[in-house]
View (cartoon, rainbow, N blue to C red):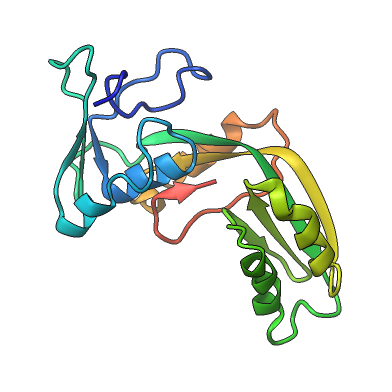
Length: 201
C-alpha cells in the first residue's frame, strides 16, 4: 500500500500526467525500482519472485482503484512499460591503450570497485576504454587513485541515467529509436541496451 495509484509510466515530478501501468513483470518492476521509481524498493518483491506470488501496488487513499499487478508473465499491449531516471550518478571513464586488450584487464578493473565495495550500474566498452556509472560517490577518489595505477581516469559527476523499461524491447526496435530522438537536445554520454531485453539506458 502506498499513496499513489500504482507504478506510473514516468516520474510525475518530471512528466505531466503519467499513466498507471496496470501490469508489470517482476523483472520490469525490479528494473524500474533500481533505476529510480520510488514506489517500490528493489528488495521488496524478492520473496514474491522466489515463490511466484503476484504483487499488487495499491493506493491506501483510493483502495478501489485497480493499481498495478506484478507477475512473472504480465498481460499487456505493447513492449514499453515505463521510464525511470536515476540522478546524481558519476560516469567513470577508464582508458588504457596499453592494457585494454590484455588478458585480465577487465578483471583487474572491476576488482578495484569490488575492493572498495562500490556497485556499478551501467558498463560500456570500446577498443581502448571502459565507462561505468556509479551512484555512491563516497569512495570514488580512492577508486580513481587505484585505477590510475594502470589506466587514465576521468570522473564526470552530476549525470543521470534515463532507463526505458519493457519486456521484449528487442521485438520493437522503434521504441529505442524514439527514445533517442526524444533526447535529441540532451548530450548523451553512454547508450546501452541490455541483453535481458527489458531495459535500454
